[in-house]
Length: 526
Image (cartoon, rainbow, N blue to C red; front, side, top):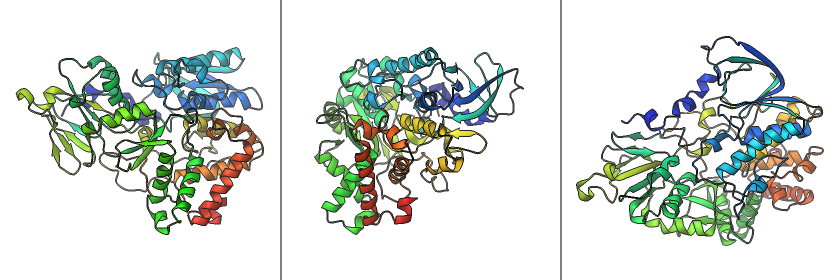
C-alpha cells in the first residue's frame, strides 16, 4: 500500500496530538509565564470563548492563547482555498465583531482568507481595547500548563484556569488519512490539491465522500475546472439532506429548536402514529415538511436521504449536484480499499470498476485522480479516544464542548465563557447548565470509522433534545435569556425571535414531546 504519510505529509502532527498532550519525553520548562486563563486552541470555539470572556469577566483578565498553527483561525488554516463559509456570516465568529463586515460575497459567505483575516484582526482589536491577550502560534501543548514554542523552548505557565478548546476540532482530509487502504500507484489527494490538478489531458476524477467536502469538490470540478460529467465518479455512501440557502429567507438558517417544532407539527398532521416514534419516521417527517417549504433539498429526486450534517447550498448549487446523478455511486456502502488497478472495493467485499477502466488499454489507476473527502469533519477524531469530561472541572480546567446543535461551534464557545463569568453560579450549577449528549456505546469501533449525522429515532439523549433542555435551563437562568437574544451568534435571535418568542417555542416543544411520549416530565425538567 502507498504510504499515507507520503500522501498526507501533515498527518503525523495530527495523529500524534493525543500523545503530545502528556508526553514525558520533553525537558523541564526553561521559561515561565503567568496568566489568568491559558486557552489551548485558537479556532472557532477558542476565539469565541476568549472574546466573550473579555467582554463579560467581572474584572480584567489576562489570557495566553496557544495554537499549533502559526495564526488563529483553527481549521480554516488547513481548509482548501475554494471553500467558503456555508452559513450566514452574521451567525459566525465572535460576540463583539461582525464577520459580515469582512466579506464581499453577495450572500455573505466569507471565504477562507476573509475568515483568517477576521481572526487575525481580533488579536489587534483586543489589544487596542486594552485587553491582555498573548497569542503564541506554532505551540505544542503538553498538559500540566506548559507548552513548547516555535523555537523549541519549553515554557511553563502559571495559569489560574486552563481552557481546552480543541475537543470539537474538525477532522480534515488534509490532516486525517483515509480509513480505507490504498494500492500502489493510486493517485489519492486531499481536496486542497484539486486546483493544481486541473482538467487537462482527459484527467478523470473519483470523489470519495458525500458530505459538504465532497459536495464542494464536485462543484469545484464542474464549475471551476469545467470537468465533464462523464469524467467524474462520485461515491456517496449515505445520501444527505441539504439545508437551503435561498429566498424566502436567505439570511435565516433553520435551527435545531425550530426543527423540533417542525417535526412535532408534521407528526401531528400525520395523525401522530406511535410507530413513528421508534424509527426515523419522526425526524424524516420534519425534513419532508421543510422540503415542501423550500428549506431543504435532497441530492437525488425520489431518493430519501438518511444523513444530515447541515451542509448548506443555494438552489443553483443543488441543481448542479443533481445533474451529477449519473456519476453518483451509491447503495454499496463505504469504500474499504482502492486496488492497485484503481477499482473500488467496498466494505461488503464487492468490487466496482470505474466506467473508464481499461480505456485505451490503461487501468483506472493510471487515468484517475481520487479525492479523499471521507475524514468526517464532525467525528472529532482527535478527542474521540478521550473520556467524556465535564465542561467545568474542580481542578480549574474548562473543556469547550457541544451543548447546542446547529449552528453551534462559535455559539458554544461563547456560552461556556459567559457561564464562566457568572461568579454567582457554583461549579455544580454551571455543569447543570451544560448537559452533554451521552457518550457512544462502548464496543469495537467500526473499521472504517463512525458515521455521524444518521437520521434515526429521536431518543431522550439525542443531541436535539439535549440542546432543547439546555436552552430551557438557560432561559431559566437570571440574565442569560437577555444575553442570548442580544448575541449575534444565537440562531434564534438571528432568525428574529424575541426573548418571549424563544421561551414560548421551547415550552411548546417540551409540551409536545411529552405528549408524544418522547420525553417524560422528569426528563423534561432535568
